[in-house]
Amino acid sequence: DGGITQSPKYLFRKEGQNVTLSCEQNLNHDAMYWYRQDPGQGLRLIYYSQIVNDFQKGDIAEGYSVSREKKESFPLTVTSAQKNPTAFYLCASSIMLLAGTSGSDEQFFGPGTRLTVL
Amino acid sequence: KQEVTQIPAALSVPEGENLVLNCSFTDSAIYNLQWFRQDPGKGLTSLLLIQSSQREQTSGRLNASLDKSSGRSTLYIAASQPGDSATYLCAVRPAVYSGGGADGLTFGKGTHLIIQP
Image (tube, rainbow over all chains, first blue to last red; front, side, top):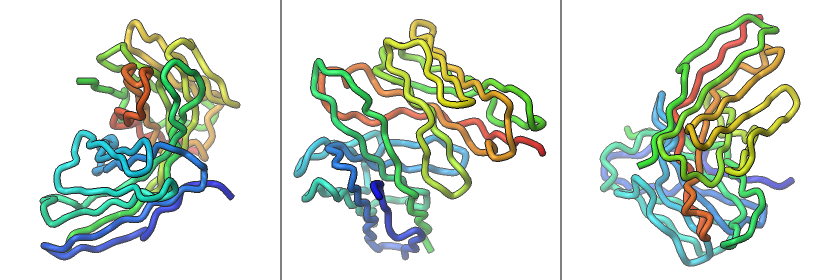
């Protein structure tokens, strides 16, 4: 059963604490993404990765870090430097089209992790 | 910077009606546009993807159109059902992506749709 899994579903963080959100995919996708969603808002891009051991900052990367040691996994760490981390976090993946090629690079999303700061 | 706007922000209609959700974007240099559905507290489900060279895509009761030059897309839902109640999100991928890479999507804030039984 192919798809994207995220864990945990709910996460609570104390002030000054780092927490890590898990994202795993078995779709054999090269590209993976992390988005943040606040109430009544659209999704905003935090980080994305095109290939193992490489990743790029999105629009709101401050206070977050990522790693991509395996193709299937793209964990997100919310550090103590992130001043307002309470949000719904969504992971996504897609194929990565090569320059000059065509195809469907539809993004598929996981079920999300809801992070709350205590 | 690309901005995506969705109108209306909320919509409530009786079951059986046909309806249209609107999406506009400020930079017409897009690679593709994707429509998603989100149920409360859940992740996103992809509904339709339209490449920049296409005019429309259809899936069942859903039809999405794209007018890239005017920066507009519409999602048409035929014969609405209570199960269609959800938030619908529109997102665009930048055209610079066509040179390779995997940039993320820019999203609108969504249209919250309620279908009354």
